[in-house]
Image (tube, rainbow, N blue to C red):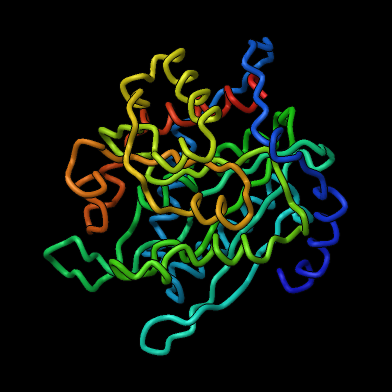
Length: 325
């Protein structure tokens, strides 16, 4: 299905998205209340989207779950954005032991006529090994939170965008191959974001900013201000956390400097220069990077997904998109 569209989509996106802002204007936020109607974000819907991904099993590259999920995401986004505005960016990378990884970044555009744009992203692949689990460490994980939750929130936003056109252009990018690498081998991580950044579907693509969602559905989650995000886009971070405080989510979005997390946003910032922040669950007072105990284990399943966490993230993003920019 995507073969014929692969030639059409770049042309359409070029005609619709080849606009941008100069470096000093990329973040440009309107901090005054606009009084616009903000659609309701459904945590139940986002939860269902995560559950559907997990039902396919692990989504590590070249697996059956990976293939089924790619088609599911393409079909679901096409139902919201329209088939002509959804694009699979297929590519391959060398894996371990001579494997060839067949990967897909999945891109959808909303309000395509708008010249002023932002992008939202998450990774949709899951880890091929549970290297933090004492049991079956060589087996792939389900990744309900690490992989599934960010995508679930973005699919719910896509549903909202289909019913309530956002006041700004919004592009959703689902990166593949983020979590493939072994510990300490950073060149095998962030495969999708690196490929997308080096091969943007639209030459000169320059949205105001980007927001990355990673592990945004876990029970007991906290979201400090990740350090790279504060370096690259402090105004955007502070606005998001200000919205959280206003909405009563200050216990989740804590006003505390977090750790420096290497993630897809660092790749995008360094290669494309698009100010991009990372909303990521981690505890800055814990050892290491401060991730949850279920991180990279088989316990990362639907049991640890909390609709209240999803609701908080969704409410903050809808407020930002519909009433603050």
